[in-house]
Image 1 (cartoon, helix red, strand yellow):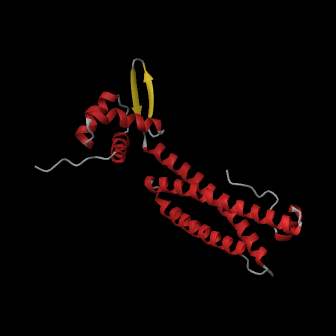
Image 2 (cartoon, rainbow, N blue to C red):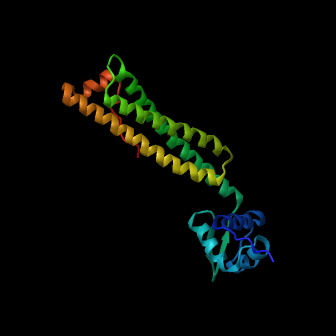
Length: 205
């Protein structure tokens, strides 16, 4: 006799959402404990935990009416939530790109008429890493056009990585300015004007 295939936690969540989206109705927990095992192969013992996890994530609504607790979730809400999250992710990515472009412009100007140095070589290596991360982010944005939930989670993680990388690059800019200030006694305002550095250059929140 073949072993019964184990259903992962993510698959249980997806199947439970399917029940709500397909039936478009209101349910008590006892109703879901009858439907889920029969139609979606979710063991009855895990139904309560799966539903609660969906409620905690804002994917399923719940309310108490009299002495009974009801649960519901309609496809329109899930789609709206995904679109809102996608727009937020895109806005963060655009802000990161803007900061990155400013830093790239600074590096290009900083190289004009100067001999290569160990500091500049190190910065260029870091720049290459940052550009590679940006390319990966662009690819993730393209993958997310269909609002796939798994791709969206990966996108959020990559945005955090990119934000950290952008802040590291901002650290590099400040380090270069500090080095020039100590070695050549150049004020920050003059360096900003000379190399076209924005006065409001700051870390990404």
